[in-house]
Amino acid sequence: MKAFVAFFKKEFTESLRSYRLVVLAVVFIFLGVLSPLVAKLMPELFSGVDLGGGIVITAPQPTAMDSWTQFFGNVGQMGMLALIITFSGIMAGELSRGTLINLLTKGMPRHTVIISKFLFASALWTVSYLLCLGICFAYTEYFWPQAALSNAMPAFLSLWIFGELLITLLIFGGTLFGNLYGSLLLCLGPILALTLLNIIPAMQAYNPISLAGNTINLLDGSKEIADFLPAMLITGGMTVVLLVMSIVVFNKKQV
Amino acid sequence: MEVLQEYLPFLLPVFVIQLGLMIAALIHIFRHQTYRVGNRVIWVVVCVLVNIIGPVLYFAIGRGDE
Image (tube, rainbow over all chains, first blue to last red; front, side, top):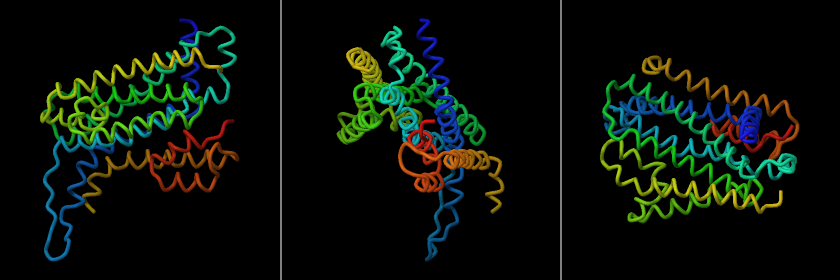
């Protein structure tokens, strides 16, 4: 426990000095402000534009759902990209620089390294995500008061679970290959594969990638929680398995 | 134009965040000589032209170890 607390503190200081904490927070605050704003401004920008020949674009009035569509689109793509970029070196950096050698030879348990890294990254991701969600919610409430949201909790939770999966993928990749490129490869490879798999309609209910973008369907009520439950369980299961595998690999790895 | 003025209080934070991150990255770039990947010209161009993701990329990948 003592080792865990010490390493957790060290992770905090590291992310402060490597700007990881600030950058991630700023990006998610940005996305939180941007999403409702784009939804609100989009029709204003397009309306009244004369395409020539008397064709004028008339855009429908934006609703709160447009704002949440923007939110899921932005956080599901740009937010996840920012998450991958900032956490890509979380394990790989330490291994390639050899900064863990001293700690491990002084008797720090290896699983503590993985677990505290995972928990710290999760904490950072959770806080940034909540910040983004809170800001987006406040703006949306301001622009469109009392908008009805169905299944809000599972819809927002699913995006969070997907972020956790990305973090464990990066930790596993970093542990396995010991460098930045391996870590990125092992994160982007599966995402690409899952995106391709998503073309098959039968797979969509089980595909973790559907948690990153499709959960807007939960909010407007066009889909049920049951449609996403298998994907959520699979993603959660994958996260645990990858975490255990990272510990197993790290236990056998020569640092 | 009046539409823009109406939303200025909301657009401003977005603009400030974007500009702030870019300036922070640029200051860091010009204060340091060596980078893990790439060189000064590449990072200045990336940070100025690719909004948000550019500075994030620099801080995550380009920044050298002190």
